[in-house]
Length: 100
Image 1 (spheres, rainbow, N blue to C red):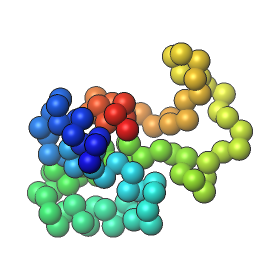
Image 2: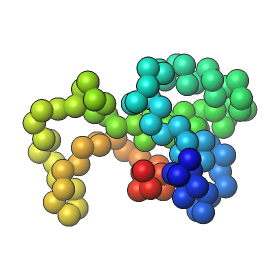
Image 3: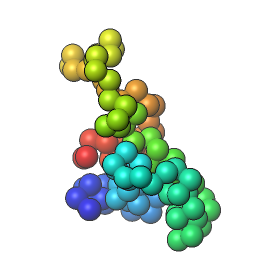
């Protein structure tokens, strides 16, 4: 809820706020993308459900615990730190990513 409260200061977009709440679900639980999609479609209109799912996927680290690499990637971020998450993001993705 902390991430959602921070995002709430910058946007009232329901998909963004829902994604802020759900941002770790795919990487930290056995819930699949299909499971989450079905859940969202049951509680939101189709457009908001699709957008929320897209944001959650973008916020999901590509290296979940079982798939975490033993060797760091070659690419480095702006300040020289390793960029572990290679997924492209949207502007709303950045709001949540920096608060998580």
